[in-house]
Amino acid sequence: MAKTEDSMETARGREVELTVGDKKVKVVPFTLGDYIALRRYVRSEKIGSFLDSAGTLSSEERTKVLLELSSQPIGEFELQMESQTPEGMTFMLWHSLKRANGELDIEELRAAIDEETLENMIAVTQGVNTEEPTNENPPEAETA
Image 1: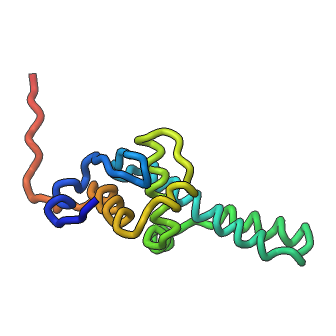
Image 2 (image 1 turned 30 degrees about the vertical axis):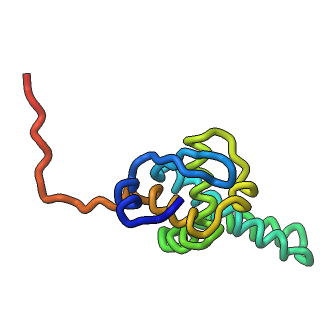
């Protein structure tokens, strides 16, 4: 897909169809559910990283650290930073694409997406947050 400012501006915040590898997929804006899934992903990555390096710890020590990692809140700054990494962007995109297209393998997605396609897809998915707030008051509800 060729990237032009006009086409990206038109697509922001709307469902669009793009080609990924040899498949056409619907790309939709991120939802709150996608951000909640990112929070779970960050937590599971932390736990996985700990488990990969915890070989010499006793079972008791591992349990203590796992309980601590499981109960630590994942802050907004940490989520924002993770969402800007290639892994975080791909996870968010994959989660959003699953919602719009059904089952989709994240490894296939990683293998099929080039940098330009990833940028285009992220621009579309994040478009839901790009509108400027207005100072207009919403119309008053009609009363019967």
